[in-house]
Image (cartoon, rainbow, N blue to C red; front, side, top):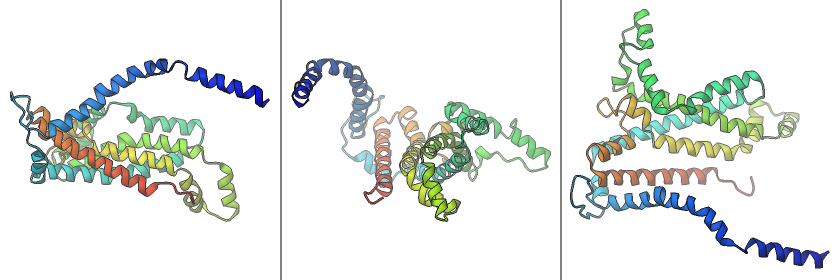
Amino acid sequence: MTQLASPLNRTVRHRRWQNPKAGLLFLLPSTIILIVFVAYPIVQSAWMSLHNWSYLQSTQPFIGFQNYIALASDPRFWNALGNTAIFSAVTVPLQVVVGMLLAIKFSRSSWFASFFRSIYFFPVISAFATMAIVWKFLLSPDIGPFAAWEHALGIPTVNILQSTSLALPAVIVVGLWKNVGFTMVILIAALQEVPESLNEAAALDGAGSWGRFRNVTLPAIRQPLLFATILAVIASLQVFDQVYVMTGGGPLFHTETLVTYMYQLGFQQYRSGYAAAVAWVLFILIMLVSVVQLRIFRYRDVD
């Protein structure tokens, strides 16, 4: 058997490497797309951030790190960063906790659970701009149903999206409503992979519902939970659609985020170099937060 297997293995290895050009040819379309639409824009944006770049100018003078230095004294940048941090700090924990509760509630296979899973997941597959328009209508003080209910109850009508204290919470609620279904689906898939025998063994040892969840379920789904959390953080730091549609960054910049500020710099003021610097600060921020999360939730051999 050994004498027969050895020539067979050599034949398989020879055929595997006989025509590597075919494999490279299959990779070529994806490689070109990645270079043109991912690698080149990244390099180009880094180059632009080091220049006083504007498409309205005939020259793009090199200024080094002056754009980044200017950000340190830019009050709108720090305001946008603060709003983005508040949005992430509120949205991400709520999205994970609510998504976990929904996943626990609807993880069983039944028509009831499937029906409500579809309802909670429907906003996820809908365009964010479309959903933001719907919510802007719902919250309108003139034609929105919420305003009509307030009027019927004798409550003073409040223009929520023009309130400096209520606009950001409204945007946060819409973001949570839109994305919680995605977290729910990820965690449902994770919960369904947890062996029931582990919970049964914990129950025989006297563990209650909370004990089984904390000591059995939570460690078993830590990797999917980390994945869902990182995606939620990245999405929250890049928040744009609902802010741009619902408030435009107002009132008085109280809902302006890093991406809406970057959009205004690049496409309304045509300060592309400065906008690229904001983009790179956001990129570094996302990388740092993701690395910290990976370090906190990483697996150890003793786990």
